[in-house]
Length: 225
Image 1: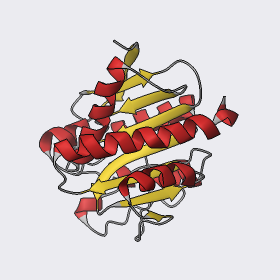
Image 2 (image 1 turned 60 degrees about the vertical axis):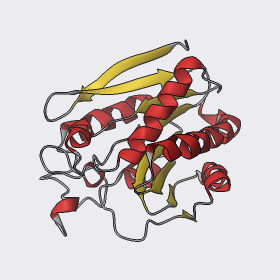
Image 3 (image 1 turned 90 degrees about the vertical axis):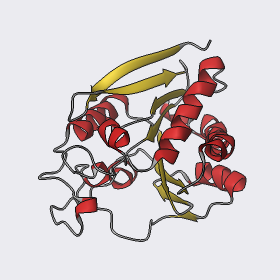
């Protein structure tokens, strides 16, 4: 079994641990994030599939951290938001964060970075400073790049035929891509897996696609060492 280190990086609103699984001891630091929205199980399945595969064999010269259920309370209750009814992908303390609520589904919280999950992640990011972030969501098939991660997106697109775009197509104040990819030197690829895809297809197609992207990262992210 592959040597894997699991740590708690913080806790959810309900007090559940936010688990981070760390693979590899050399190379660039990579973060793979699943379950930002609890009603998007496809990203959680893909993250868990990676963890399962890598427990047997981790094939990269990289240091990869997988947080499969960032919004663990939301995942357990099958709802987009956390238990405070905050969309964690609108709660990051970005320069464009806004308290304006266009829809309760996208509620940004009372203040930027108000949520314990957000606070745990921002602290981890500050300490670890990953050179590439892959955020696993589900919607219509799209690869949204923020920062210099086009080559990883192309590797995934070659496998999945997903379209690559620099914009998701609508405003996303307080999102991870802006916080990391645009405001800090942490290129972020938001990987929108086809919504409603069955778990077997997610594991067959998208676990492999992520690994193809990591092959690219292994080659190009040496500057972060």
